[in-house]
Amino acid sequence: MDRRMTEDFEEFALARAGDLYRQAWAMCGDPHGAEDLVQETLAKVYVKWRRIETPYAYSQQTLLRTFLSRRRLRSSGEQPWAEVPEGASVTDPMADSDLRMMLREALGELSRLDRAVLVLRYLEDLSVAETAERLDLSPGAVKNRSLRALARVREGSLR
Image (tube, rainbow, N blue to C red):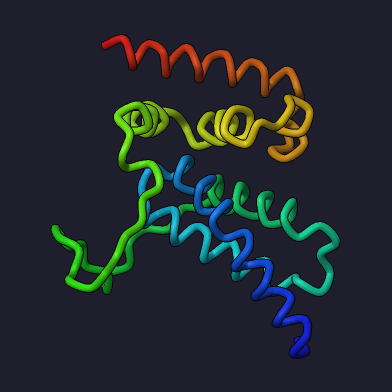
């Protein structure tokens, strides 16, 4: 890739990483998984950068498909830490709100596809048709999944 294309990609990544992270966080339910998902998505977008006509729409689609198909297990080299090491900063845009914490917990109990439907419909404010197109579902399936997922979220919040 030539220098100009690389600069264009870097500019795009800096401008849209926050939006992609917000979507990924809502789907994954944790900041570390969201960071990994955004990083993997941007790597995939970079590879196809020359051929992409609508970069943000393509990156959202890539994020969704990567999230839905992710089957990776933690590699043996990764070690979980109880505390964040000094000097590290973890920014969690939704950590300061009780309501958002309840939403995170409720979304965590849903299937990946149901979470993706709710994130696209209600966080990203996409129409039923746009959500159906992005997830390769029929509009009826999106409506049905939305209705059932919202009912499960409401059930969980009443406990």
